[in-house]
Length: 446
Image 1: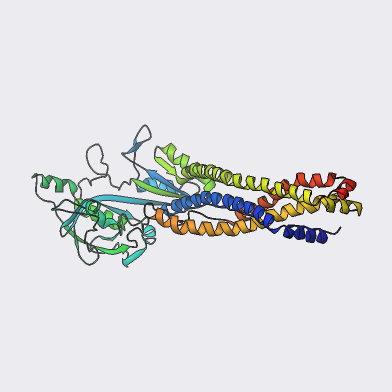
Image 2 (image 1 turned 120 degrees about the vertical axis):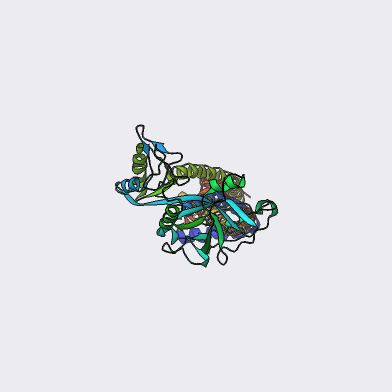
């Protein structure tokens, strides 16, 4: 018997018992959709995690810190320009990017921020900052220019009422770009003057050159800080403090400042992922604290895989129930078609063809159920992303890719193949039973 004849007979037999076939297929549809949706939620979680990590920094970047000073056991280690040159000279290191943070007091109108942090970064970093208004800072300007994050205004509070956005839920009315802002660089002198000790420190009129993109609920990695060119910040601090120690900078044993600025944080970018561990270990051996996102990623990906397996297992239960339904349908079909099977055997139909006929019917049920289940799973996934995504987005920042459920092409193919395999396996025992029927007994059967 030709394969085309077997396909035609299988389709015809299934169509003759439409209601039973539809109910059996429905079980496969639910099982397939359950597996795809459950696994897609785990995949979506992993994608959101990776997108958030990529936004917060390169996967090949090593964060080097010098909190409270580091030591190699014999001398204090300084994260200064000389050390940065040593980092840059290391094998597999592409670039070394420092950042210099300095705390100031900022005031405009009735609002003040006594813990405002200015982050001096390189031009390379400044060029990445998305602007909603204005321009990037000019490091050669007469006074220090900076870009203000869209969320920075929330950290200001009313000097009279002592209330901020976090109490009132009203963003302070501060115009960084069009109005100058009073800035005090010597915070120690400011607090002393507030306590009646010493004269008030000098105030500088500064103005922002731009505002980063962002708004209510629209967060990005640049929205929380104040950025300026690192060279301009260094020049300003040297001019203000002259030969006096600069707050936040380490000093020598005699109390004098070092000739070079020291950084709390430096980003060392490595050429390839496989070289990260070697460079990381070299930096740690020098005595610095350093870490890379790869360590965190491996841990989170392992958790994500476990989640996918658990969710996939839950969905597989539905498909297992559907497999029982397919087996039951095929057994009933054999009992109803006993005489037909006997006639086929008497006419000389090969045992293998009879087995193939019933396996093909079971495979058809799995294939049709799997196909419809895939279509259904795409609809469910879209609903999850549209409604549950909005609900979660009100409370959590989910990164660049906020899809809760994501269905890759390999999952679709795997689910369809699994559904067909479940159908074939479920129909195997009924097919063997059909092969073993006695032709004469089958013909006499009513």
